[in-house]
Length: 195
Image (cartoon, rainbow, N blue to C red; front, side, top):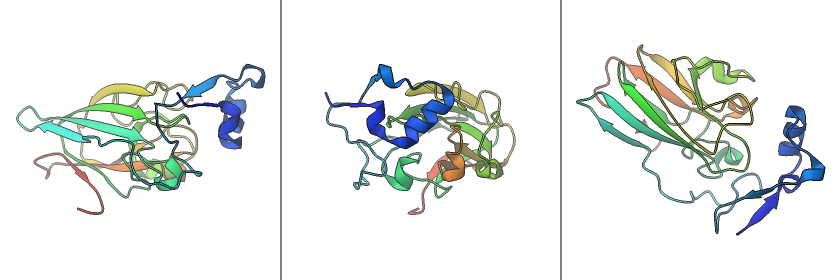
């Protein structure tokens, strides 16, 4: 199994970890990566995902949608992306009143999370509380969100929102995708620039 230590990840993680008091050079804990995985980030040139993921399934009769949101799906935006997109260049369109079930996966050794906020909030260094009740991974604004998490919420009003990384300054650096909620939508979609 391939392993790297926290110090091998460079100043970015080290400085952030020191800020939050979780890095101890005398206790270099190895960070495991899946067998054969390449780390996406500034040193990775490949822009291909590690595996194919179904980002959306739905039951229109039940007004319910299941989303998969993967942090660091590929090397776009130096790995600061969801499902391979960043800076609001892609996102979900969901009808008002639907229940949204999210499965979050972080494929990076760098801490990431996801929280639903109004789209204008993505320019701020800190994301704060989710716009919809329950629309966040645990501890989204800290470095303690698990590698995998599930949460559910209802989009009970229309508007322009974002799935944003709650880790400080990540969303302001482009780590977010759109969430558009409208009374006019009849089904949920994951919309990319190619569509």
